[in-house]
Image 1 (tube, rainbow, N blue to C red):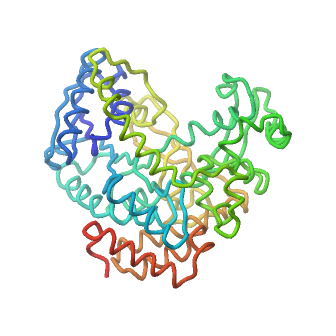
Image 2 (image 1 turned 120 degrees about the horizontal axis):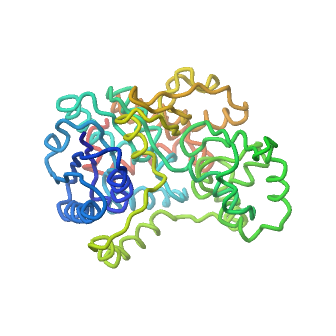
Length: 435
């Protein structure tokens, strides 16, 4: 069995996903192929994983800067690339919109930042797909890259890959909600819940205690009581949406704020303070991580490095497919009729059974109509961005941006078009094909 990791310079993430696989005894001996275009970061991950392997496992690890050689014969392909990196591309995605008064928090999933992040990632996805169809056509493509719905939807619908998109927001949804409201830490493992929707905007539709009692009334009471105000400061947007629309959603408030037209508004700057919205959070985080890398590198490359199996889905999927030991995950897949009141072409996030037959999504009941309606505002942008990647027409990019909830709440049609043109010019070589 062979796992190829694309974007292996993402050292900490490679540690989690591949370290998890090394710590899975039922996988036995297997091959790991690490691929990256940055030889220094690639070498760092190679050394780190060898240290983990020496301590815990028996994998055979190789590193590659040649894509086809890395993919040759792979059974599973993990995608973790960031095309354009922090500089120049992420900086561009934030700084150019600022000139128009358009502010973002993360800018990697939806909005103007998410659209352009997808457009510059798409040519690299095509390269991956061409190589996979040639040297590992049966491989399962495990996509961890944002914007999740655009990249996974494009990979399946347009590139013909056997793919599933993976995120950790579902695993941490209930845990995060309970932390804000003072529930005991171990309660998260005792409750029953149901989550479905789209990536970063899936809905906690049901949450019950061990006796089968609905926990939502008490959750909402605690949320409104003021008793837990200090613990809720980082998550006020999600709590507000829960009270307005009835359900808590999976992704953090800093993300959620920029998927909607209600919170980041230049005409109402007081909302930023009221809901504690961290504008420019992602660039700040990147700068901090870059600063901390040298210190972190020593720990990561230590021969005494420790690893505990994480909650990332990848190793559990691989184990289930290889051993036929079934597991349940939440994956991003093409909808069809899985969620009846969302578009068939949409990429949705639903429960999936995994075994030797692969990833098998489970059909869900229709979402509450208000939840489906909010999802559709995001799906509109995702589907039009995929169409733009297919046609390579700027006109289709403009239309995706025109329909974005946050962008359209702040800018006029002419401003949105001009902003897109400025981003095409600023990104230059990263987006050469659009006309």
